[in-house]
Length: 401
Image (cartoon, rainbow, N blue to C red; front, top):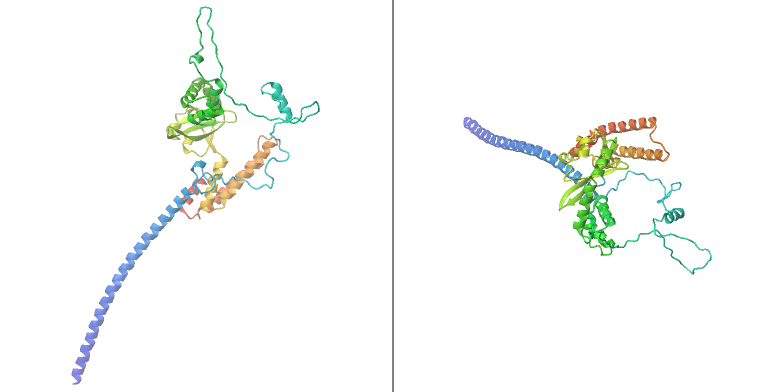
């Protein structure tokens, strides 16, 4: 009986062990399944982290593009988005505490009575007298009003026959009706200086003439084409004048030609300006400009990389550099770019003060001090750039430095 008991106990123990082994196998299988799932989730998490980082970088890049406007880049104000920052909101100036308007000690630009008397005496201005009050021999107070008189004038040209009865008609009068030199000069000036379209020029001059000129777009185009022909030698002379200058500034203005975007590029110094029509800002288009192929001085421009293929040296206007620095301050959130803005603004302020005092150059010690501050700020920027979070802001900041 005791043997049967042991046998029964053994059988029960064997059954329990079998069940435990079965449960253990099930648990091992579940653990393996869970471990496999953990591995899958770990890999998925890695992929999502990587994707999330890429999306954050892309978001920073797109945000940088969206935030670009005329206040922090070289984009024209016409590209600013509605409801965004006002164009050129940042100007790099610091408050002076002075009231708006003319400043004490600064020479005024108003015309004086003596100026007017000289103009009347020269005979170049029509002199009219208007009275207020009862006219008498007593003293009166004189005030002057300077204005323009715009009215259409029709000049009748009468050409008489010579001794042989022949009529010698000058070339400019071959047509029965032509436009005078003043109309042509105004049209050409508005086209070149004002960069106005032919239809707007015709509309403006027709309005100024009280609707009596009946000027067409075709006439304006003809005036400008004829002026182009007769001005070729003058333009060549201006190009030669600019080509020997050490420094020449250049910029391009967008214009629409037959519905397509084109450009008018100028090259200038203090007393000379030459305009060139261009279909694009590409290197290929720039190579078509004779002046650039010959020029061996410094070009001042808005960081147009295509222009670095011409000239021997390059400089940028501080206004545009300050825009790039402002953009960096907004996106990288680093201090060095604000410090650089202050330095450049102060340098310009000191330059203007020296010019107003008749100086033609800065003292050597001032230049040395500026250089030390300049390179010190760049070193500071290099250090701060290492901690810039966003990938694209970091890259653009490094390029700016």
